[in-house]
Length: 275
Image 1 (cartoon, rainbow, N blue to C red):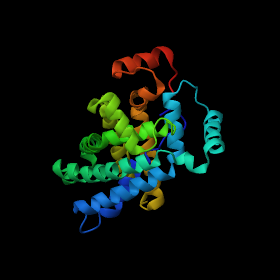
Image 2 (cartoon, helix red, strand yellow):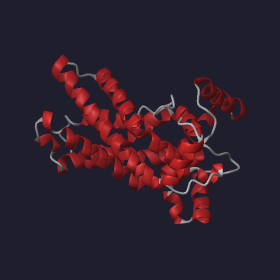
Image 3 (cartoon, rainbow, N blue to C red):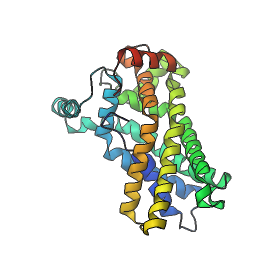
């Protein structure tokens, strides 16, 4: 979370705001409504920040030190060399992944809240269950869509010579690495999603409650601000693990053998700067 071009958790924040929109709906328990709300929110959020997300991944896996100037140069060079649309390279893979991911995360969060009876307890005493609901929702959605996340990361940092399409990523990954190749980096991802999703949902809910009860504020602007703060908190809590997973996911492209979590951590610690 110290790379300067972080996501601010647009997907999770958007899903949390979608949750606010639906909770007053008499059909809010309808799983189809939850899936649709999460999918739309996730797609819009990710498409908006796609060039910055691609830049972030590039610096996460490279040895080039990050700076605002270097990030701007990466965007400018991409535009000059390949054109404006290339800034969104990999966004098709992102949408293929983020639509089911956001939909599942949002729906899972609702279902875990009900299963854990979060709303049945006094608001001041259910912070731990809020965190647990968010964490479980993150683990659920990440597990079910992980191969798409790996494909998206590889598309974001590759060229046409590496992968021509999303289908080409899956084809080459299976041919070279087998089924296990689709889950490279899964362990740090799950270890990271627990604090990330838990902190995001917990912080968002806590801030909203505070703003409403203490100051009487409850509107879209406040929700957006709460979502941004929650996103920064969640992303910051898990960023080192995010770097590890990206390096493991794209090791076949970079040529550095990031075989497992421990090996990757030691390589980063001994030879690389934290981005």
